Length: 229
Image (cartoon, rainbow, N blue to C red; front, side):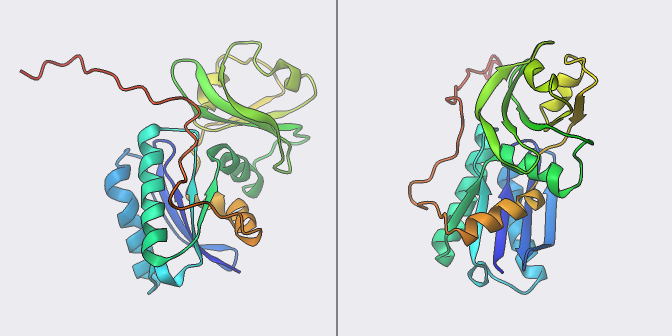
């Protein structure tokens, strides 16, 4: 099986992992939003610990969003640099898919679960979300959603629904339904293993030169209110 470098920087958690033969053999994480200074160092440390170089790996897989504009840029830039330098193919996994596999691989699904709704925190009461089946199949497209007491009521009427992600916390106090289950967690590199292996087997490689993250929303620069002089 493949040896893969896995990179996840779509939220406040910066994490990287190294997989071999379908198993995670090294993992690094930090949640202080220092993605630019940590991502490349984490990868270098993991490879050095195992006496490897990027050239010894089969591919690099990066989280493609949605999520933090800055975080995604750091992750994708790092992944592209590794691919260009080592001549390796690029893979990409959606951050919502990563949350889904966190639940599936981690045995976190509630009994009788009908749907998994991964959520990435956006602004105010908004999240980026989609809907998946318990076996990881996406059945509703990724889109921004404003959370209120009636959100996802159609899904909850059918049975247990797992809301997972760093956007699940803001829903827990709003969606009052016994069928709703919440796990507040960030997507992480280790949870990329299964979908990354699948992408590699199917040779669904990205164009290293032209690949861009999936921001979902356009980046809007704001003007600082602080007086510099």
